[in-house]
Length: 168
Image (cartoon, rainbow, N blue to C red; front, side, top):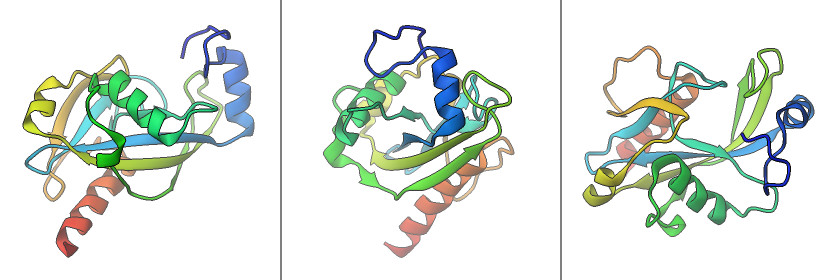
C-alpha cells in the first residue's frame, strides 16, 4: 500500500493500521483454475499470510464495485486484462481472521472475503505474471496436494472446489 493519501482508495500506513484495528475489511480472492482444474496459489511475501501459499486478491476500495475490483485485481495481481467478471462465480462470503496486518505485527485483521472462481483458457494461463505480493506461484491439484504451507483459508477453497466438482 502506497503512502499517498491523494490516490483514490489508499491510506497512509498509520491511518490504515488504525482502520484495520477498528473495522473489518472487504476483500476479494481470485480462485483461478487452469484447464486441468488446478488452483493457482502464490507464495506470499507480505503479511498477513506471509510465507504461505494463497490465492491472489486484495481489498475492495471504497466506492469500488465488485465488478471494478475484480477487473483491477485481475490486472494488478495477474496482469490479465481480458478476463471478465461475468465469467466468475461467487463462492460465498467468508470471514478471514489474522493475528497480524499489512503494517503491524500486533494489529489483528478481519476480512470479509468474497472469493470468485474463474477458469482460464490456455492462452490466458500463458499470460499470467504475478505482482510483488508473491515470490512464486504454482498450480495445486484440488484433490491431491501435499504442501504443508498452503494457508488454511486457501485449503478451504481447494476443498470447496473439489466438493463442487464431486456434485456436478
